[in-house]
Image 1: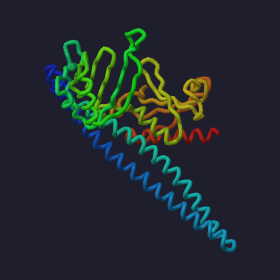
Image 2: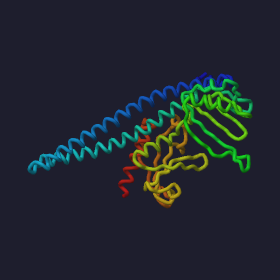
Image 3: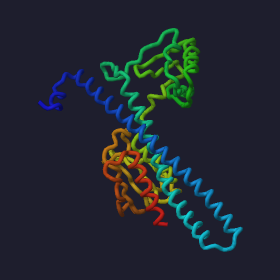
Image 4: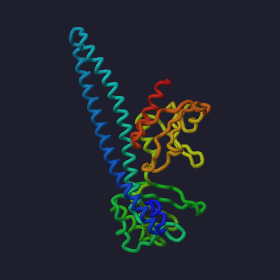
Length: 327
């Protein structure tokens, strides 16, 4: 029997355990690959920046000679060559910056995804995540280095709805201090779920402390948005039923509400732009539409075998190049 066939005939619990093991292996490899790509992308961007700075210094030196010495065709030609070189370097650095920005997002997402996969899946009979009450001393359960704190207050007008969301990050010592302080209040309960998230529940206040290494993973669209930002291009999330895509107006000053009534791109991969970065499948498709919503053209896809970060940088560069020819 084939491996998929054997896998399908495993008992449910064992099959789930095997799936988790395979997923952790996949994500561990993804983290390693994205880390290497991020490091390489940073080195390229740094090298190009240094070359731009060296080019600028050389240009200033040649320009000073042009101003001081008698007219010289050689000096003029040298200055023109340096100008051409700088234009090329700036273009390459912009692309490298887009690649680096996307690579940073993809790698961070990979780390978050692996952190989730490494945590236990403990759920009750109804499928909800179980959370247990923590008793004194409550501070000991705060073991993560950094937490993201979310605070909600009960609306005093109706006594039913929660409002006033406040976000901040706190270190382990502050998290422990918060838990100890709240645990001493009447009708206050401290809870912990299997993922290490901590909760304080009182009749009027809700406090959640989430370890920063289990933040929600970034999406493939987040990586693309980072690359587009390197070209000063805005990107807006759009959906239609299960389909999702990023909408990029041709004019960067166009708002989200005005995008569909103006020339714009719709970018998706297999009709999606909202999957976790590690689940990016086919290369991006960037389709251009006019102000009436009619499809005009589709840009060339990135080379076969491109990583998500490379795919994002390619699309961002292609859109910026297309936009420059329309002005």
